[in-house]
Length: 232
Image (cartoon, rainbow, N blue to C red; front, side, top):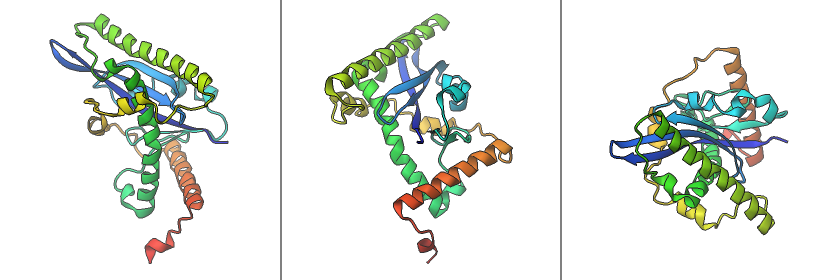
């Protein structure tokens, strides 16, 4: 059975006397909103791919991914055979690829809810007021984020036991609160920072592309999509 894992970046604004900085963490979450891995200790200027390479799942994927399991990512990440990302220009303008990307964006909502759940429980992550003076104060801000993630994960475990559910309640007020009025949405900025790309043509890239095409074919079969209808 294929395990669908979701990945986003959590950007936490750090406001202080010197202006606003950002602490970046790579967060890997499951469809049930559980956070299962965090790469941490980076500034907001760190490229997505660089932060991703510091996660445990990336460095020990054979330990955490079995068989046909893979990770969904967004377009800021270089595709791998075990990491599937949307089509980018010019490929994404093709009707079939656009449809695939649209379905992938629906999956991304789950990762947004995972981050919203965390920020809803810990409002400080929306605007953490710590003055970053040096490496020590940056470390303090990073540990603050990690502490919130750890307590949040523990709370989710206890809540799941109490409710007898394997996933979070979609009507949980923390999710609603976390998704609303977040001034630090990172979508636009991450699009600007996604310039690092691995050149096409490598054997790994070709295998990754083949994996994505296979998943696209399975998706179209599941939804009953016929590409010949577009040609007409």
